[in-house]
Amino acid sequence: MNYPLRSAGWLLIYLLFILAPLFALILGAMPPARDFWTEFSVALGYAGLAMMGLQVGLTARFRYVTEPLGEDVIYHFHRQISLIAVGLVVAHPIILFVVRPELLALLNFIEAPWRARFAALSTYSLIALVIMALWRVQLKIRYETWHLTHIILAVTALVAGILHMVGWSFYLGDPWKRGLWIMLSVFWLGLLLYVRVVKPLFMLRKPYRIAQVRQERGETTTLVMEPQGHDGFRFSPGQFGWLTVWGSPFSITGHPFSFSSSAEAPDGRVEMSIRNLGDFTSSVASLQVGQRVYLDGPYGAFTLGQHSDMRVLIAGGVGITPMISMIRTLADRGDRQPVILIYGSKDWESITFREELAALEKEST
Ligand SMILES: Cc1cc2nc3c(=O)[nH]c(=O)nc-3n(C[C@H](O)[C@H](O)[C@H](O)COP(=O)(O)OP(=O)(O)OC[C@H]3O[C@@H](n4cnc5c(N)ncnc54)[C@H](O)[C@@H]3O)c2cc1C
Image 1 (cartoon, rainbow, N blue to C red):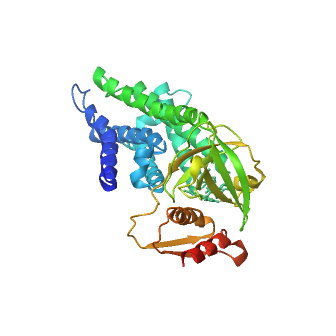
Image 2 (image 1 turned 60 degrees about the vertical axis):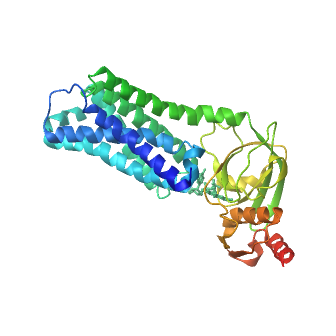
Image 3 (image 1 turned 90 degrees about the horizontal axis):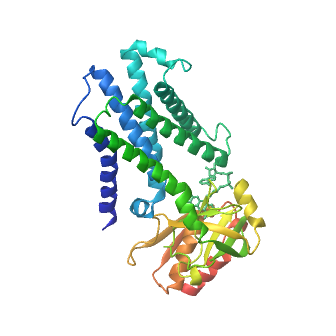
């Protein structure tokens, strides 16, 4: 199936997962009707919860899902759709408080019933999550700390949201409706289990070993990694992977880096060239040959197009890494089509791969 068709297919499946459970609520036996705004606010709550649940799937790095769209599009979608989901969830109590002010008493955490406490917990977690996601840099929160907190808040919001829904249970009188929403909740939590337990277990069985640590121009270190006890994976030049060192694949945060080696390199060997730009990247140069690391990949839709395409590559700084992978791959494949590389760097000395690029240029003329 081609990429646009697959993308449209995934969008349809996404809409089905959000809207179908909502419409299912209005089928079959119904509870006594209430005023429009109460019903509307409840619908917003259900829709927001369904959207929140599927967020786990969006960040699960399912290759079949991300392939046609690209990882960056998926993350952008995750970010935007989260804001909409949080908007819906927060609108749910606000509308209720406006139309039925007596419900404001539920804000008293001590005296409120559990189902209302769960609603408050879910809403406050979501608000904290959004504030931290939008203003992480301004709040000076380390990426790793933010990532861990983000996951804790998201799981808290989701589980508390589910418990609130089950506790209130107004629309879930019908056993099949209850069954449907329970299955949906199990599916969301299953996704979480897959991302945090099952996938890392697979990675644990497929470790890599650092075969070489090479210093490059521009405060950049290349790690040459070889698969240990397995064949590794094949990637397209331009793609990237998530690297985990000093820990297991169960670590919360991996770091994304493009593969800089040729996709034709033998024995499943891959290279990543990492510029010293922060706390993790500054420690890469001290890695030792023989150290065990874990790679999750390949990901990304940014790669070489058709053989007949005109190839113009534009890179700045360490953005050269996917481009050098493309150039090395084309050279290894004996591809004689011209490539134009426009490459900016802050100074002449820090042009990573300068000598190799000059040599390849000479070879091709
Ligand atoms: C698809 C992709 C490909 C990349 N390829 C390369 C490459 O080939 N070579 C290279 O040197 N750099 C590459 N980067 C950038 C690299 O991932 C970050 O510079 C690195 O993760 C920063 O980590 P740090 O702890 O050293 O920096 P910090 O100072 O902790 O963070 C600097 C900024 O980097 C971002 N960042 C930090 N950690 C992560 C993380 N785990 N995941 C996502 N973003 C993070 C945050 O926005 C943060 O504010 C790539 C990034 C992406 C998204």
